[in-house]
Image (cartoon, rainbow, N blue to C red; front, side, top):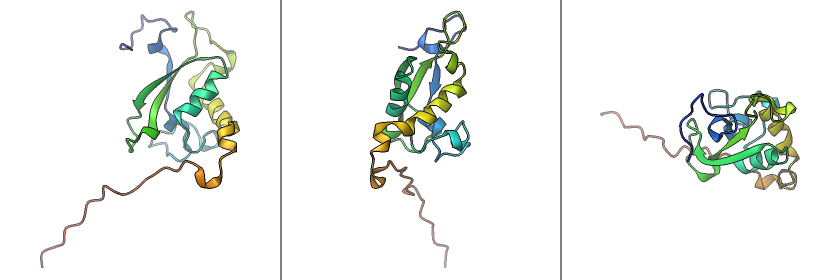
Length: 145
C-alpha cells in the first residue's frame, strides 16, 4: 500500500517515483484536458499497457496502478491506469542518464509507442477511438406558451 508523500522517503520508495497518466501524451487531448507535451511528441490514445511495455524495455523500474486521471471525463476501464517510474537513485543521481527528467521519459514514450508491433499491425478500422458521446445532454425545457 502506498502511503502519503514525505521528504524523508528515499528515491527508491514507490511514493517518490514519477507518475505518468496516458492523458499526458495523448495527442487527442488539449492542454486543458491534461496533455503535458506538444503534439509532435504525443501519440493518439495511448494505453497504460503500451506505456508500461515501452518503459520496461529501457530497464527503468516501472509500476502500474489502477487509478483514473482526475481530468478524464470517461470512467471506462480503457482510460484507467497510472504508471509509476523510478528515475532517480537514493543518492539523487539519475537511474539512466537519458531519462533524468519527467519530460525526457514522456518524450521517449511518445517516440516509442508508434514503433510497437501492436500499433503497426493494426488495420485503420481497429484503431482505438475516443468515444465522446453526448449522452449526458440535458433535454431543453420548452418555454411556456
